[in-house]
Amino acid sequence: MPGRDQGPLDPQSSPPNGGSGRPVRFRTEPQRSLDTAERIWQGVYSYADGWARFGITIDATLNRLTLRRSSGSDYSEMLHQLVGRAAEPALNTAVRGPRVEQLSFEMEIVGVKLTRVSAGVFKPGPGGDWLVVQAFVSGGSDAFLLGINDHMATGELFIPRSESSPVVLKALARVFG
Image 1 (tube, one colour):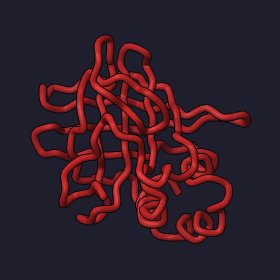
Image 2: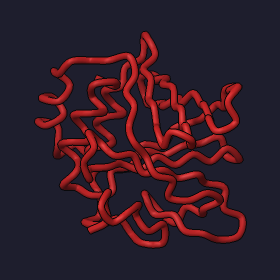
Image 3: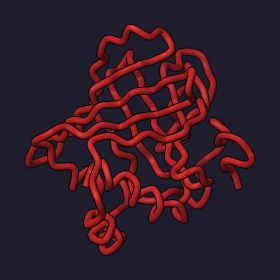
């Protein structure tokens, strides 16, 4: 089983156990950074009744991914999509926890210039424009994938292993709850 002890997920493999829920796709808007090892975006997740904005910072020097909430955003639909409708009881429990304005995760770069094959599956290849990182929750092996494609101005958040969903959801709900 890929995870922290075995390194990042193989970008050419399919997600173990089929993942959970569906990937959350969102629009990205690059932001300025004075640090060349740091990339910053604003993510905008759109759904039928509105949108949710959030900040994304990848610091390659510190191997850190930081997600920031934006005031006035409703993230409930985004979290529902991420974990799937079958996991709604777990989502309701996770959202009741303490909230923070931003949350950082240790991360590993899975690859750059990757091609997206399907939800959570990326592979090296010509014409690939995806930067993909695997972010670890609470120093353990539970993780999620974040992909950013600057050329298409899009991003994707995906939990590749269904057994990681409760832990990942609880962490993401702290910033997106």
